[in-house]
Amino acid sequence: MRIRSAELGASNPTIRAYVTAGIPGVATLEAGDYFIGDTAWDKTNKNSYTCDAAGTETTAHWTQTNTGGLTKKVWVQIATHDTVGSAETSFSFSGLTGDTDVIYQIRGMIVNAINGSNNIFMQPNADATAANYDNEQGFDENGSAGASNTGGSATGIQLINAKNLNDITVFFGELYAKTGVNRTYVGFCGDAMGATFDSLRQTGVWKNTATQITSLTIIDSSATGIGVGSHFELWTPRVPS
Image (cartoon, rainbow, N blue to C red):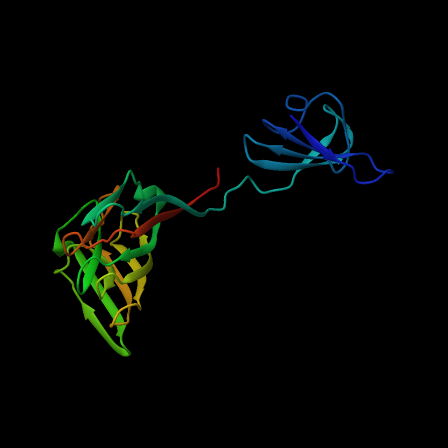
């Protein structure tokens, strides 16, 4: 299929661009003449080519100008969740393949619907067994630094600590999701709206090395603590299609 061309000068032939379903040649190009500088995009294999020897669809020579297609991954948003209508206690991102995706990035913000401190956790495969988790936090609260460990007592990997009713807490973190090792999360969150200013640096571990992650459940330690207006995003690296 021929793409509209651009004229580069009266003394030059028109430099043209083409889209092909395979390597440019007699089987994929229209009959005609091709000139040095013409380009072709192989949409099947996602490779680009430049004509470096003029000729017909049979005799022109094309050189690949990339290295095997679009192989570099970029972060792609694969799911979102918004709390609407009424506050909620939990929700899940499902249909995941952790061994394929390898790493997940989760980010967003919550509106705290609890009149006081509120913790939000993440449970791979909805696992609520406290012995399967370990959490280590370093925090700054109103200028005072501290640390804590909740190994064996929290039923998930901690994402968020919010301090006051209707506070907005923003968070960001990454979870290594592939089997074979403990699945480790590293993240940050910050709440600077109410009477208590708080920032949290979080490392959490799901101590299951064998089971593929197929879902991530986000759950509040208090009932209906995820307030209306809360927003969550899930990302993973993918090759652009």
